[in-house]
Image 1 (tube, protein in one colour):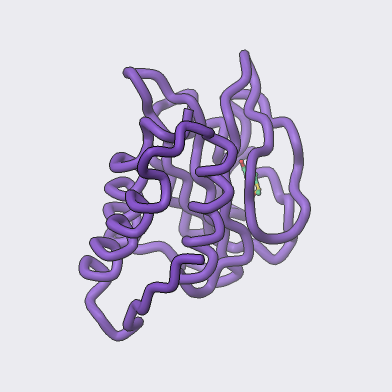
Image 2 (cartoon, rainbow, N blue to C red):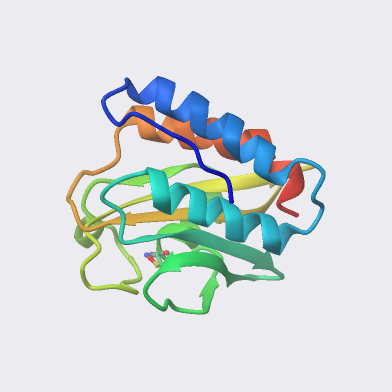
Length: 161
Ligand code: SME
């Protein structure tokens, strides 16, 4: 539906600026969080290389519950505090994991995953969900990826819950 041309040779900061403006346009005026998470997962999956999973988990009580995603089927419920995603919610901090095998309690939904980036989605001061990105490449996610995804999620968080 939305056709954007991103040149992969651009600096990462420019790619994320463009991706964030397209993400904002995609969710603009749409209050349904599930629909928006579905489109944002697809947008990231299409334009960010070397991912084997991209999607959301939503905070439901004391658990995270699988939301819209792209990639292989995944575990449905994760206790807050468990794994990389649950740690991101418990701490409210981005988790950028260079080697998932070295992360205590990492939950392996896809055995191919080697590195992971989890960004909390904060609305009205509370973590309502996480964006989870997995890569089969060790140390795939840079500080620029972290900053870019934090900016993207921050720009659209009000339409994700
Ligand atoms: N690896 C995550 C679980 C979710 S899957 O990667 C899709 C974790 O440890 O929380």
